[in-house]
Image (cartoon, rainbow, N blue to C red; front, side):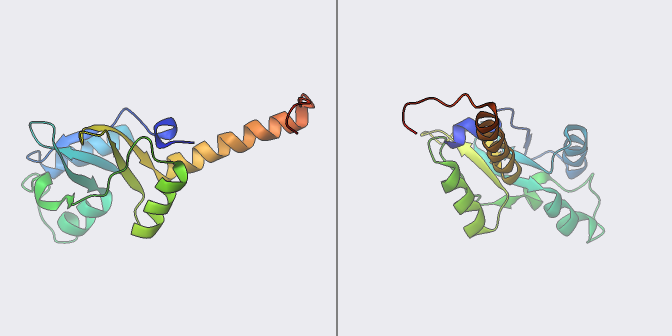
Length: 144
């Protein structure tokens, strides 16, 4: 299976000049743990995570109204192609100790995001489909 089969195409984004409070509200309202940070021209700049906010704003006693997303976001993020396999995505996540991978096309444009949770959910769907086939007894005579 490929990344494009499991990725979320409805990527929640924020601008680098938005304040952290706005970002946190957007995360809460969408029940997500990160936002992809884009420039005004749509260029992928980074990723803002709950951990970034806790470490660089809350723990330091900073005002989330005054700190800009671009000041605390994770930069130099790792991305993946939609044509990569889910195994490739899992390996990249494991090797780099990350849980989120923005998905970009050949021109580097953001087209989705795949998370560790997405990989687990997709794997669960595959297991359930195969289990249903095994239980139903509707197994064909061709190929096994």
